[in-house]
Image (cartoon, rainbow, N blue to C red; front, top):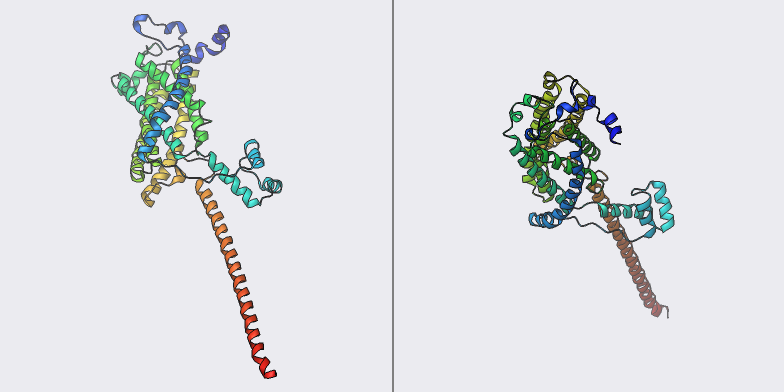
Length: 405
């Protein structure tokens, strides 16, 4: 297996510039640590450790914090227990077609409108509440804050933080400091934990883009570490963490219904995001990996692959920037941030539609009751009229009888 990996995966032309072999990257013990692919194996237990730590954090810290900030969960109508509909919901589909609704209506002896209402209430039961979304946002906020502060503290004294040409000076024979090693391991372990838990997390409108982002980030971190692009890789992670802190904090305030503070913080996040992702990232990071690096080595497979991943991230940045600019436009001209543009809303069915449907059901029920009461009142008045008519006729007959006699 090792010979096969060395022959196909760890080929020098994939990972190193032309004219450089793996032997040239060996460092003496006094020179520092050279990044090795086997180091990435530690990220898997770190990912499971992050999942366990998140479980404890959400219950011990995030839930009490949500109560202190006033996060309230919406009261949802519980769907009645109907075994046939429950089996169809779990095994076949959460949103049956019209033909399936008619079939279920015949099986259960309910109207099609009742079937639609049951499935809507059942979907609402599985929809995550505000407390759960607050806990998820608070967990990410804490990690991004710690990662950004730790990453900035480890990079601010490095020469490549101020001059990106230093990222390539002496490449690939560049030692990795222990602080940058742990920065890499923790970041990759965290994103791996997000990818492992994506199926149970809140499903968002940009779900596909988030999955692509996590996969591209893992490939980017893993490949940059193996190819010793650690210096520029630390800059990439720092740029991303800077705006993610503000985004997650804005989400937390949104769930706590601190509307004014949330909208103001979102505007700050939008400015930081646009500057860091659309100016600093392409102008500093991609520029140095795509153009400046060619002054130090000739292009090879790793050069093209690494830059392709960076361009994928940049395409996602442009997509998110478009959504953010739409939100900022609505905030400026309408005075508030519209809910349907936020990336933290579910992608299945808008809850506003469900509320409208519930309102229609209640209105229909009220109308039916009003019609029933009106019909009852009409019947009552009709009966009263009949009684009055009978009494009147009886009196007239009694008054005429003496005359006839």
